[in-house]
Structure formats: C-alpha cells, structure tokens
Length: 193
Ligand code: 5GP
Image 1 (cartoon, protein in one colour):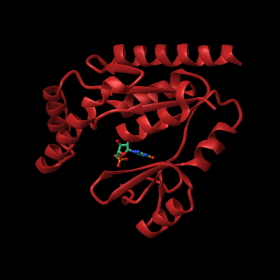
Image 2 (cartoon, rainbow, N blue to C red):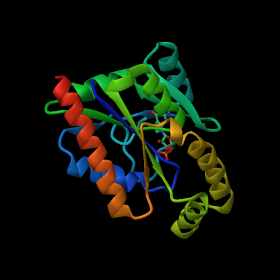
Image 3 (cartoon, rainbow, N blue to C red):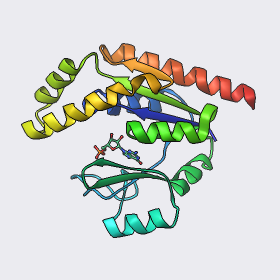
C-alpha cells in the first residue's frame, strides 16, 4: 500500500493542484471519505463523499470502520474509511491511493503508514495572500472567511511536520513541484518492489 496525502488550508489551491496531479501522474486514485456534512449542489454520494447521518457515522466509528476521523468544523465529522482505501488500492493499475484530508488526519495517517505514506502540505504564500484569495473568490460570507483564516493559521503551524511543503505562489510552479515530488516518491517505492 502506497499513500499520498494532500492537505491545504481552504483557498490554498489544493483542489486545482490535486486535479492536475491526478491528470499528470499515472496510477493515482482518490479514496472517497465519509462525512456528516450535507452534500453541496452537484456533489454525489459515493463519488465526492459517502454522506452519512451523524448516527450512521457514529455507528461506523464504533464498528472500527475508520482509519482516522476528525471533527474538521464544529459538529461536522470527516473520516477515511479503511474499506475505501483498501478497495482503491486493489483497483487495476493503481500505484498510489490519494487522500485529501485535514492536517490532523494527515499526520495520523503518516503515523500509521510511515514510509509508505508521503504527506504534502500545499501552503499559500502567506496568510494575507490567503485572505485576499478567499475574499476575491466571493463564495464565502465574512464570518466564514474569518473562521477559515483562523483554521488556516492553525494548519500552517503544522506544516513543518509534513514530508513536503509546496508553496502555491505561482500555480504552474506549484503543480510542477508537486508532480516532481510524487513521481520521485513513486519511483522510490517502485524500487523497493
Ligand atoms: P469540504 O467540506 O470542503 O469538502 O472539506 C473540508 C475539509 O475536510 C478539507 O480540509 C478536507 O481536506 C477535510 N477532509 C475531507 N475528508 C476528510 C477525511 O476523511 N478525514 C479528515 N481528517 N479530513 C477530511
């Protein structure tokens, strides 16, 4: 099992970088997480997330179905399903399973998998730059922006614990860097056979 774990504060460009990584590096597959938050318009159950009621999520937690679980926002739980990771790893031509999870989840997975996992933190150039991006995106209310910035500050404090930090100042440079790291990691893993 080889895992690539992507983490980034909201607005740091993780979604775009993740999409480009998947397109440019062969053999990467996302593992779908479970969450208790409501689906956003266009999101599909089992594709974007496995959407669970708080009761169903708690039952699966009690059954030991999760590799890790975090309350990412107050009252909203997210978790990596062991089965999802295993099934993804078992699909044809997979070289690595990709997880898109928060800071604490990422560090937990690193503890569990060690050298079999590579953790990448996508950082904005600064908190000020992140604030500007969130404001110009215009999708969040001021209170939500404040909440996300507060969370970003906490997340950025954990960046040094990641294997790799990619600063997304210029998108193309950040994509190239992320692709380069992932390729090098897969080659290392490949050689270990
Ligand atoms: P969103 O609600 O915007 O889809 O995701 C919010 C945050 O939850 C993101 O930072 C995302 O990386 C994180 N997240 C998504 N799935 C998981 C998971 O399975 N475990 C953990 N720990 N965080 C997750």
